[in-house]
Length: 238
Image (tube, rainbow, N blue to C red; front, side, top):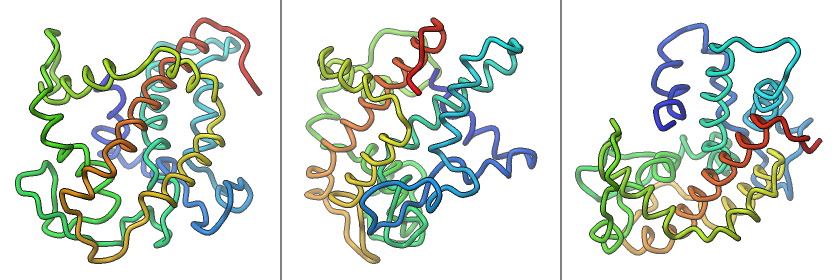
């Protein structure tokens, strides 16, 4: 599942036939808007409506999907559920998800770090890699066979151990990609909007980590809920 979820980034972007799908990883909601508006924010397709389309496609019975088509749908559903739960995939004042806002991230040796990364990278990668030291030292990787690095498996195990079943069930009741986008907009406005040359220090990491962790948990719980619902052919919400 981990490899499936990263396929649209690690494999699809190598091939020109997927170039047209690049805008489907995000939506640029007006940072001053109160909520997502499809006509204003998603006139040509975005993470919100494309996620809904893939969920519908995976659950369709007529015509039946081939195995390749089912796999393709799961790759994109897994990936887009993750994307839409990262607040800067929904909104930022620069209108580009924070990719046009360079900041200072003074931590050495973080995977994929540029000399001066942008705000989007900080929320996509930096805060996860630089999560509080106390958490990193307490993680222990589960004994499972996987190609994923042990620290990622350990983080997943830690997030799962912290997730109460009742809370996961409540998160799964929210099934609308539009609702996910509105959650992301509110979180981005309160916690993730960054200014050029802002310094991401240890205090910033400590303060923002609970938001990052909860969004990872939400995305995982909701992905499980979507797949369980669609693949068991239960009635879907409109």
